[in-house]
Amino acid sequence: MHGEIVTTGNELTSGSVQDQNAWYAAGRLTAAGFQVVRITFVGDDFEMLSETLTRALERSRFVIVTGGLGATSDDITNEIAARALNRPLCLDRQMFDRIKSHARKRGMEMTPPLEKMAWTPEGSRMLNPEGSSCGFYLVENRIPLYFLPGVPEEMRNLMDKFVLPDLQERFREAPVMRRRVLKLYGLTEPEIAQRLDDLSGRTGNVLLGFYPRFPENHITLSLRGDDARSVADELSRVEEEIRRRVGGYVFAMGKDTMESVVGRLLSEKGLTLCVAESCTGGFIGHRLTNVAGSSRYFTGGVIVYSNSAKTALLGVRPGTLRAHGAVSDETAREMAQGAREVHDADMALAVTGIAGPEGGTREKPVGTVHLALAAGREVFSGKYRFRGTRDQVKQNASTMALDYIRRYLNGDPFLPGI
Image (cartoon, rainbow, N blue to C red):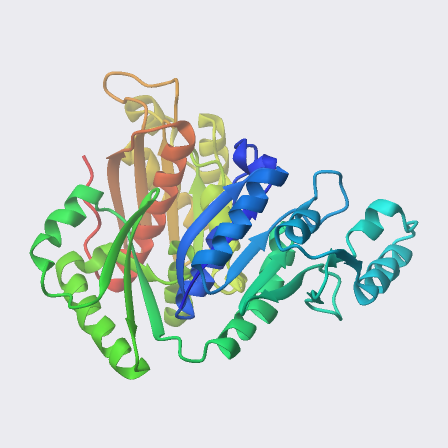
């Protein structure tokens, strides 16, 4: 069952704001077995939006419109929809009372701009009548149209609680659609393509997609069919074949992240972790503590940006710094050992490097990063060179550091350095 999404707003067409609504709606629709055949971005223009809406009704089985339902002067979706569908604007008393109640609770006066939000095309019905998010739907020539707010949180709430269930009820014959996402780190796109080159002709009807998500690469497997069990079995067959070719580079699936996978492994093994960060400036600790329940395994971290901090807080020897420099295997290893003692953790991760854009030398160019992992009676370390902006170097360094833990706990070899 196919449909399309129309998202409105000058802030989108001007590039001032990055769209999140169409991306979210398309993903949710695809996962539910619906096919999105077109996504259109339109500015706050009567003629363009009216034309887009009219054409969408001619070629699709359902239409979702986001944006332009607010109280400001550029929120004109209600008026455009009324004119395009040749329906008069009518006051939705239920929506009006909801807006009025919402305003009263916040000490606001019920003004004409707020009232404007309750004027919708004749025949419309309010979505979520018990909630505060404004949205409405109507049916035109058997085609349902859903008008959702542009605020991402409100749009997602209405999409999940009302639009998807309504579409599933209307189109019960929609096929089963399943999608899996394999997340990889440590292989470039060309390297992935080379490893999967001979997979052509062995995937059946499973569609493969390749998407860079710096510093990761994602492979999607999608299949549409009539039977959920057979679809799942076929996806598993292709997934197994892909994993055979890319091995331990797959670190997660679906919504899992590198930090959530690492956290789960630490929890399962009953181990604790601490970090010592220089060039990443606390980014690794931030990622680890973004996972709910991380206090079970993360004991703490220390940011040692200067040489004096490395010595005072972690016990890195001045002689080591003089002989090898702050960016070296020797310093990283002493940072990890010192952090482990300070925090009394089972494992300690350390990173030191040159994030740039300045500070590099011929021997140690920008992007040079040293990692060390103190675990058990051993200390593992490696030297890496990451290219890109300062932010990209920090992202790559933090991901490689977390991957060190994942690979160690899984018994996999570390990614080779330079």
